[in-house]
Image 1 (cartoon, rainbow, N blue to C red):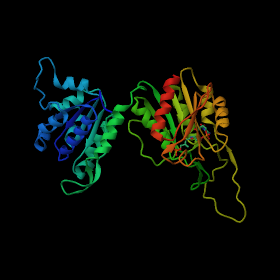
Image 2: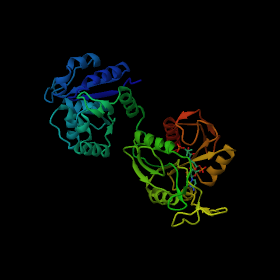
Image 3: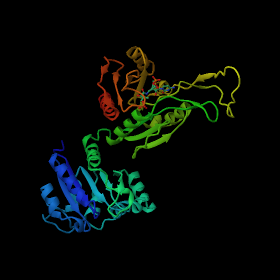
Image 4: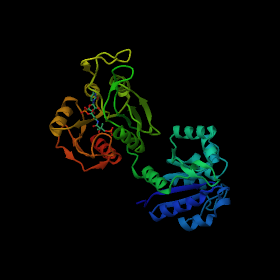
Amino acid sequence: MLAGKVITIGVTGGIAAYKAADLVSLLSKNGAEVHVVMTGSAREFIQPLTFETLSGRPVVTDLFNFSEPGRIPHIDLAARSQLLVVVPATANIIAKAACAIADDLLSTILLAATCPVLFCPAMNTNMYTNRGVQRNINLLKELGYLFVEPGFGRLACGALGQGRLADLDIIYEEIIKSLWYEKDLTGTKVMVTAGATREAIDPVRFITNRSSGKMGYALARAARDRGAEVILVSGISELKTPHGVKVLFVESARDMHAAVLSHFPEVDVVIKAAAVADYRPKITAEHKIKKSAGVLSLELERNPDILLELGQLKKKGQILVGFAAESRDLLRNAKEKIQKKNLDLLVANDITQPEAGFGVDTNIVKFVYPDKEAVELPKLDKLELAHRILDEIIKIR
Ligand code: PMT
C-alpha cells in the first residue's frame, strides 16, 4: 500500500519513543521507504539500532555527519520525503518548529521540508495543556502543519489526563490520508456549504432541519487534503471544525446567502451540501411567544435560493455542484434542479434510505449531469463520497 512512498520519522525524547518503533515497523511492512531521524534526547530512551533494524536503513542523528561527500543530510532528506512524521513530538520540538529554530538535525529538516508534516504530541498533561504549548500548536496548525491529538488516560508520570501518544492505528490512518490522495486541487479555491440553517420564530424558537454537517465537513476535509484552499460556510453543526480550512459560521439562510455571495467571485468551485431552509417566518417575534387558547399560525416567506443565484452569476471556469435531498421522484426532480440552477453536477440523495442523507456517516447517491446519463454509486462513507465528488469535479474542469 505504501510502496514508493518516502516517509521520514523524527523521534524526539519522550517515553513514547518506543512506540515509534512499532510505527516504523508497520510502515516498512507496508512497503514505505522509512528514514528515521533521532534527537539526542530520543537516544536516551531508545537505541538507534532498533530503528535501523526495523527500517533497514541507517538512522541519522547528527547535523554535521556528512557520510556521503556532496550530500547534505538535512536538505537531502527534506527534499526526498513525501511526509515527515514527528513521533513522539515533545513540547520542545513543537516550540522549535513554531519559532523556526534550527539547532539540530530534526529541527533543521523541519524547516527545510516542503512536504506535509504531521506532529504526534506526547507529554505530561499539564505540559500539554500549558498555554504556551497550546499557543505553539495552534500557530503551527494555522501554518498548515498537521497534528494527531494525544489521547486521554494514565500517563507514564502517573498523572491522568490528555497527553499520551495517540493510538498507532489513528496515526497510521492520518499518515495514509496525508499521502494517499494526490494534491490535485493545489491552486484551486473551493467553497463548501454544510449543516442546517436556523430560522428564528422568536428569541427561543426556530425552524431548522436534520442536517448534521457531516457531508459538507467531509467535503471540506477532502478538498483540503487534496491541496485546495477551502472556505467552509457552516450552518448549525456540532462537528469539530476541520483544521487548515477557513470556516465562516452562519445561522440563517440569509446569513448563508450573504457569506456565500461575498466569496463567490474569488472561488473556482462551490459545493452546496448545506440543507437550506426554503422558508422563514415572515415576522420574528421580539419576545417569546406566549401560549394562548386556539391555533397559532405562522406565516412563512421564501428565503433566497442561493444556488439558483450562483447559477445565474456563474462565470466561465467556475464549477457549481449542488445536492438534492429527495424523498420521491429522485431523478426527475434532480434533472429539473440541475437545469434550472445551471449546475455542472448534482449529487442526488434519496433520503428515505436508512443509510443515506441526513445525520448518518454514509450516503447513497446518484451523480446527475446536465448532458449525460446519471450514474448510481454504491453506499459510501461520506469522506469516500466526498473524494468521488472531487474526482468528478476534476474531470469536469
Ligand atoms: O449534513 P448531513 O447530516 O451529512 O446530511 C447531508 C445532506 C442530506 C444535508 C446533504 O447530502 C444534502 O442533500 N444537502 C442538500 C439538502 C437540500 O437542501 O436539498 P434541496 O433539494 O432542498 O436543495 C437543493 C440544493 O439547493 C442544495 O445544494 C441546497 O444547498 C441548495 N439550496 C436550497 C435552498 C435554498 N434556499 N438555497 C440553496 O442554495
